[in-house]
Image (cartoon, rainbow, N blue to C red):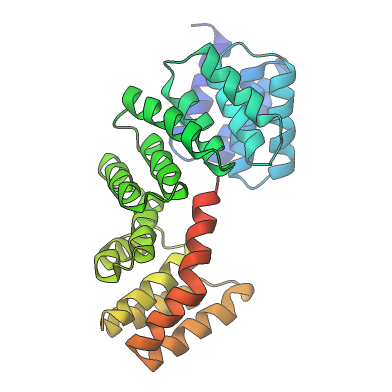
Length: 280
């Protein structure tokens, strides 16, 4: 292994550990010596996106593709990066990755994820079912399969897929929240509550899921937990969250029936759709 490969491996290790600042800094140093290296540009884009530097991350992905990478994993990663910015070129990049490496589960999953959010459910499910066949224990692939099923209106099947994702990664609060919200959409509040409570514990920074769980707890007459969750949301809320936190608190105060009506009419449909449309 030469020094450039070792540098890239170290940067990716930082990413695996969730240390995005170190990953980004490591790759910026590498970029000084290799300004046109598509791998450095792509993974630096990933790190900067995770750091909230969306504009510069987008430019990294564009630069990566301008360097004409021949690695399908880089194409899938950069293509997914473009998709998160609604760049129409994302489709051709992701399709190219699947054609280049049809046995690469990640490429098939990212292309399927793109197609699902573009409303092409049949093609999306074909790609994602192929990806699941290639990587049946990969939590991201299973989650995206669940999303595609949900967007296709197959909610019971989506619940099963989300549960498979949760089994593959028990610490994945995002998949757990999708399982709970899908059950709520099916009208199964009592079944949804344990998943929503678990998701809220796994994602303490997620104000929205805490509020959804609070209302679901109130509907189930678990008012101690409902108040605990709404207070947790209040403590972590930013100024723009305040009105919704107070609205949920008021509904919990009013009791189970008003909480259920508010949950169904004002929160579930919007929160669920928004999460399904959030790109990986």
